[in-house]
Image 1 (cartoon, rainbow, N blue to C red):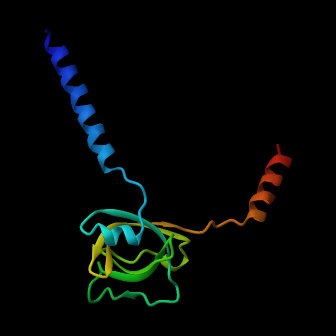
Image 2: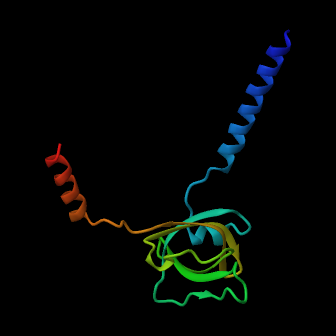
Length: 136
């Protein structure tokens, strides 16, 4: 067997191992109840910011600690402790996706994705489409 064949087989094998490992990390969205039932596990929870509850962020004490309350899609509300800085325009977010796990009564998140509201309303989009098609 030639040296190039051995290298090609090794590269293919490494690629297959990488795909199998990546597939193991892919997970579906969870909720707070599942996170409570499976402590120590890593969960991705989709929910909404509870705007009527307090948010705590004091960068002078700890710039990488931010806490707030969130409701998951099933309606369960929990306190979230995010290990990171408070994102800009956090209060305007429409939806949150948190990655982390339960520690006691709190959900400790290590990663957060925010779905922010569209900066265009439906009327503005339709108007811009109309102007665009008229100018063609």
